[in-house]
Structures are given as C-alpha cells and as structure tokens.
Length: 381
Image (cartoon, rainbow, N blue to C red; front, side):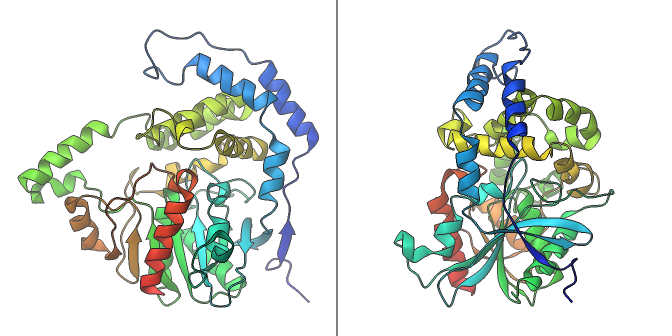
C-alpha cells in the first residue's frame, strides 16, 4: 500500500470564481490615500501610478489566462516533514538531461521561472543545443503560494534544503544540480553542504562575495573606496528588519487590502530593479501581477515572511554562507573584491563578466539566465 504521506499527487491551479469576484470588488471599493508632497517615489509608490495599475489589475489583467499558462506545467503536491509541498516537474525529452532544482526568491513564487522552464527542459524546441537539457523541478518554498506554511517557528534555509533533498530522492533523482537567487541563494548552498555526493554544482544569481564591515580591515585602498560606494546604494525599505520585527502587524493590511498588497510588492519589485526607472520597464506587467495575484489568492503575505523573522541570520540579515564541497557558479559575477571574498568560502568555477540584469533575472532576461545556467553546468556535469 502506498503511504499517503510520501505519495506524489497531481495538482492543478483552480482559483474559485468567487475569490476572483471578491478581488475585483475590493479593488473597485479602494479607499485611496492622499498623495504626499515630494517627487517621484521619494515617499513611496505614487498614488496615481498605483491607481492606474490597480485598475488594470481589476479590468484588464486576465487571471484565467495566466492560470491556464501556469497549468501547462505539470504540477504536484507531496508531503515532506508534515507539510504539503507544491512543485512543478517538467521532464525533458532529451535522454541525457540533468536533473535541476530551481528555488525562487522573496517576494516571489514558483512563477518566477515560468519563462525559463521550457528553455531548460526542451532546448531543441527553442533552437538551442539539445545536448544541454534539464529535468526541471521548481518547488514552492513552504509558506509561499500553494505550499503549506510552517506550523511553528524554526523554519530555515537549511531545513528547506533538507526538504528539497527528500523531494529529489522521491522523484528518483540521486544526482542533480541546484540553482536559485534571493532566498534560493540561501537554500541551494545548504543542499550542497548537506549532500555533496548528490549535488553536481550550485548556481546562484548573486549574493556571495558581498563585503561586510568585518572585511574592511583587510581591504586595499581601492577596495575601501568600493565599499564606501556600496554604502550609498544599499538603501530602501529594509524588509528584513520590518518583517523580523512585526510581520503579523503588517500582514493584516496586506491580507485585507489587495491595493495594500499591490503597493508593498511593487515597492519591493521597484527597489529590486535599480537599473531601470521602474520594474515594469524590464519585467512584463502581467508577470508581476501574476505574482501579486498568487500572493493574494493563497493568502501568503504573512506566511512567506519566515525568512526574515527566523531564517537568514542568527541576529538578523546575513549574506548566504559559502561552501567548498561542490563547485559554485554565479550569474552576476562582480568586482575583483567580491571575487576575492567569494573564493574565500566557495569553490568558484564560473564568475562571468558582463552579465547584466536586475535582481530577478529569470523574470527579466530568461534567455540570458538560461544561457548562464547552461554554461555553468557544462563545466561541472
């Protein structure tokens, strides 16, 4: 008899029409704030911009079309450590494909990779070399989208990594690659630490080699000048502190008001796109609203905050820790200072120069993201 706790069950997104109608009704009855003095976004997301975007969400954004597109990917649910875990699993038609697990970031969902899955799994279909193909697994992190939320404090990237190892074994993958950015960049090195015999290599979008105050005494004058410059652009709303201190308080508003949620997530997406005037200039508007809609329909504004209140550092924010048990590749690369610091704690075999893009590169530049993943795993498979 199959143990229901380890069974892999088919899943399909099917948001009730009543929930969609409720969203549209709430958007139509929004009580708008007054626009504060100031130019641009210096006081936050401007009222006029958000009103227009909310109206588009209500009257033009086609959730059913986005839902159908996501349902083109085979999706499943399985229980791990007492939590239902949702995941996409697309097997490549290529016989020598490499299993690859992708871990999304915050405030994002599995839909972060919706434009890259096909390129990775079926390169021949997209005019790419079929010798470099992947069986693609994209889980929803616990508390995000359709994965169950942690029942108690203590969820960490290390625990998520251990869950992903169970998931890959359950799918029959003993050796595989691991990729992630943002929150995913914390999870995938932990997979290598826990099971270096199973992880072929770790590819992350960035986040390693970032200097801290503890590194300042070892810096050359040029490196110190670079450090001083970094302090000027590391600005914005500190979501790590905010969601570490009072996630429940803020989630009341984000859970009750779709415009409140929209304003918060668009504020962060704009901060995560510093090379553009606004996130919509580089990420498709409907892709962004699909992400916001997933947070709304699954009521996960609160449950997705665990990385900030107990996950990313012993005393608050910390950069992902390194590991030298398996090779590491980084999409973003960085300066000579960052490479020096990254090599201190990682076996760096892929550190490209010239790759461009903002924080969520899989959404913004899927072809470049896939090309870099392919380049890295060609070196380590």
